[in-house]
Length: 169
Image (cartoon, rainbow, N blue to C red; front, top):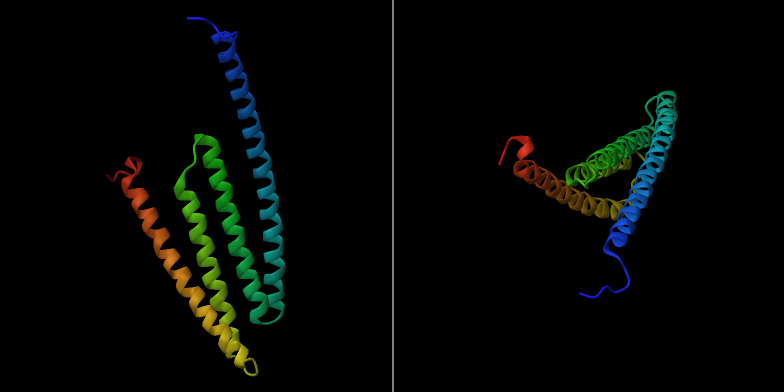
């Protein structure tokens, strides 16, 4: 067979060099992403602490308490994303379950925040026609979130059941 001007060894060497360069960029991206997520966690914990302190000083006011819970759950979500990045970095492959857990935490976070916010609507002087429309849209959002939570739980169950590492097949 005739060669087309390119030696196969040269192609293999070029492919290996490109693969090494891409791996270096990938590792660098994971490191930068990890550092940025760690900074976000520290800022989130600080903001949650400030909000919690405001709730304590406000002697049970629900506004700062809702904000503190929202920020704490956001930090939990970011920590879970950091775990997902670490697992992906170690294994060298994308694993579905940690992403489903992050989505589950995000949905539960939103449900809790909506629930805490709607408890404020029953306070004297806060009920008006706009609050009724808000309640209807909130109920729709809670229904959708409940469905998403069920779907993600079923997916996690199915992934674990099909994974031989969990001892179930």
